[in-house]
Length: 151
Length: 409
Image 1 (cartoon, rainbow over the protein chains, first blue to last red):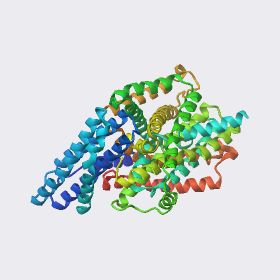
Image 2 (image 1 turned 180 degrees about the horizontal axis):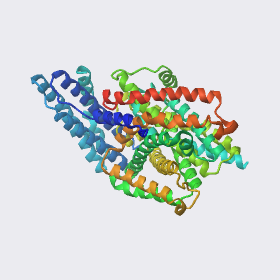
Image 3 (image 1 turned 90 degrees about the vertical axis):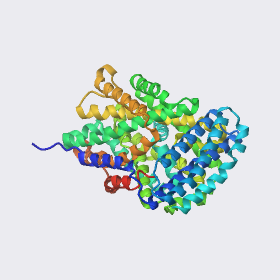
Image 4 (image 1 turned 135 degrees about the vertical axis):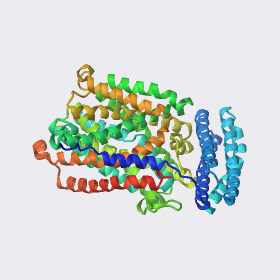
């Protein structure tokens, strides 16, 4: 009896690919840790720039408060998630400890500022947003420099 | 005059119904990361869907039977089962992503967590599938999807440097900081968004639902030759908007709300209102199409009575499959899986499954026993065959690229 022609092999390959794509192995060297730190900085810079764009929209009264609050909530959650994912990686050596401390300062600054913006948006205090967002330009630049330096 | 109106309505609904959550996510993600360096993939995808949807529509119009029905008869149960296996799985994932998209659109409007909107969205999808007439459903949500034209207006009002955009599209280059594997991974996802399998099943089954005859072949051609490219232009506008506003700031979009940001910055609150409505219309319309396609594929494979042209009681198993599919899709989203991540994975899986969907259509469209004198022209066969080779390469490349790039990271 012939076997039914099901696309079992391609389906399995794709399933394996999906699973492997989501896997992260332990970090055993400075080089790997550094590349993960650079990746984290790039992702955080994306969240920071997104928050700045939302502030731009809020300043120009270009969006409903509910939308601004929603986008900032998502951005804040993302910033927190990026930081907790990075902090979950064990630094393999002393140099990595330094790198972690340097990046964590930037991640903290970004997360704190975005959280303040989120609170302001929830309270409808859109006028305060440009002032609250002021540190983000510097944080974004530093994150970008960090990502480039450690790529 | 009546025919002309019918053709015009068909084109408009084809345009409005073209874009779904996959197009929104893929076009924004590629625009934000690669600018217009992947615009050629969108063009290729539109050519692909035009060629194969025209074939599928012609097959259904000439034979009065949908493609899937003929695939089983012409190529046998085993090949049709492979086709069913790949297409149904991808369509079910797409349905889940569309239900998630509807919930996300309502969340943008209300600020209430999207998970709370999943059950009502699924219920509404099922109610419309059960109660609303096919043509009313198709026309209503197709026309509502045209509100996505707001993105075109936003791009126009942004006064971009058109020559720079054209240069970026015609001289594709991998941007600094991005690798070639990631570039090709996103190319696959973008192609998957334009050539999603459910579109041909919906299109060919729709031709039977609407009782098309050979006199309607012109409607078929106009829908695909004009409607689909114009629909593709909407997806291109989304990509351009992301290129203009997100790419310069290095923003990698991860939420549906970010797709709306460029429109908000240019057109303000009115633009935002239109965009949220467009998201709802596009995802809800696609949820209906994917829900129907789930029912079509299963019912046509097993030879059950199917379609909305008969009362639900006469096609009970067809309606049951749709109900189970909608519930499964909703439950998948309720697991708290990120709908946008699900869409990204779905697009690549969809692209990998494309040869299994499109090869049988090419075979049936060349069979004179079914098609008589309306078999494929040489041009259709040439383009269709070249596309098929590309799709096979994509099928082979998708798994390693997914692993190497960690799903496009």
